[in-house]
Image (tube, rainbow, N blue to C red):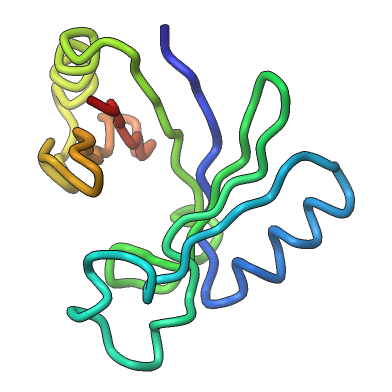
Length: 135
């Protein structure tokens, strides 16, 4: 099974935006700041309270967001990705390979926080896809 979710990028106001969306849409809101992650030591002091990952959970869907971008300011056109959460690692590997054909690897598949497999690519049509599998 694959869960598909939009993943939004903000320029330092992720917490404010996601709080607003929560008030408008309901759902269960949670977030993790940079200071609460293993990469906190690699980030400047000014980034410590920015949102590394947040989510607004609904019964069958999620809206996810971050303040972290690929070293550029978030603006219309580069401020959203499609997040794919796989329950099968082989299916993730197959899909990642197929979608990257003719595209560009942004972040190669690798083990991330909590032993999760994670990678990011831009497909041949310019759409950004985030891949995730929790072992």
